[in-house]
Length: 287
Picture 1 (tube, rainbow, N blue to C red):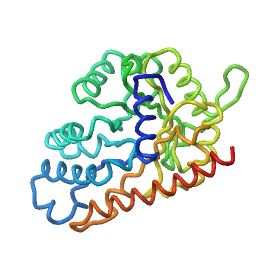
Picture 2: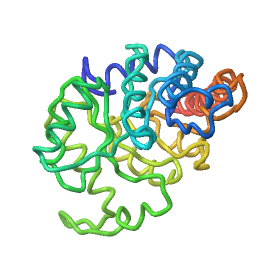
Picture 3: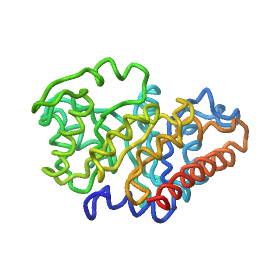
């Protein structure tokens, strides 16, 4: 999965090491923290919460995915907590910054430098709406991952992503046009290109996998968004039973609200890992 010595390679190693496709979203909401953490200042509360989640789940996950919005919401102290969170995650666990970025090439270059070089994230999510030149600064980092939004998990995703366009004699939804571009970029640039496809749309997950058998897929939408785990995983795994990062945020990190929140998060991560692995093994044995 992916090129050697890149995000794709490190992700594959993490999957093998943990026997897991689970990706835990580190999306802090202080109002949902246990009472003993809410007594702390915001930066310390977030860092201690995330540290406990990471310590409890690091052997169960193939990646972590902090969402930038949950840190920006707390201003400067939130960003400080994000940077500190990134630094405390073990080097062998890939970390995706969910920022859905995409801008003019000169601006994108500054985002890429900040997210990859200054903050040290292994991959970012990107919005390709502005075209290839807006993503080249990210795609030029050979050791990083660039996860392109294709079919997102939100209910309104079809407003634009499902609009039919005609290209090369074929009528298809916009999301498949984006997918075709992502495959092209994967061959043209050194970064590992991946896809973001929501678990809430398993039929589209299957369609994307059929057209892109090798690209890694970030699969949000399980847990709180009620995506069908079994259907989406069966649709999205590759021929080796890999190729997915099955993301759950609220369903794992807020599984408990008491002082044992980290233990509850671990139990939720184990349940998700086992549910996903049951589908993986059934898929591989049937192949």
